[in-house]
Amino acid sequence: MQMQALRGAVQLQEDTPAAVKDAAYRLMDQLVRENRLDASEVVSVFFSQTSDLKSYNPATASREGGFTDFTYFCLQELEIDGAMPRMIRVLLHICTRDTRSLKPVYLDGAEKLRPDLF
Image (cartoon, rainbow, N blue to C red; front, side, top):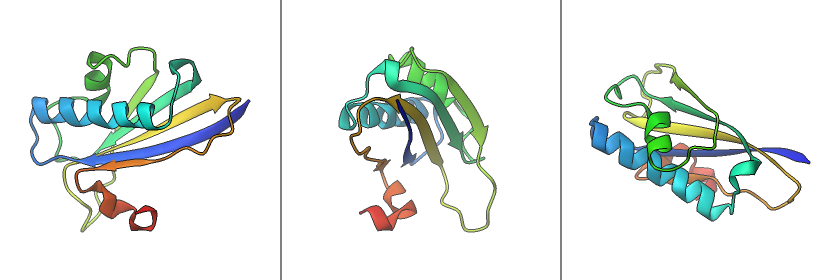
């Protein structure tokens, strides 16, 4: 078995429960689909969000969207001058026998976090 880490992020236009639910679900859905992940391979999921997002918990949104077999942990991002606002980041720990390369997912402006990947 091999342990791998998979990253992703999404930037929201507004802080509303509906926006957080949509963003968290889309981010998880695309990570799972693009990387052909099976729920049994996911060891844990860490969500972080910037302090300007307070309306909803992204882990709750992910569970409500159907990703119920994962173990979640949430935390607040560090407050850094000049950091991008309204950002949800995710880190998945994957344990698999498959040696495929995992593809990070950055949505809705979050691509600016990792210009080296795009």
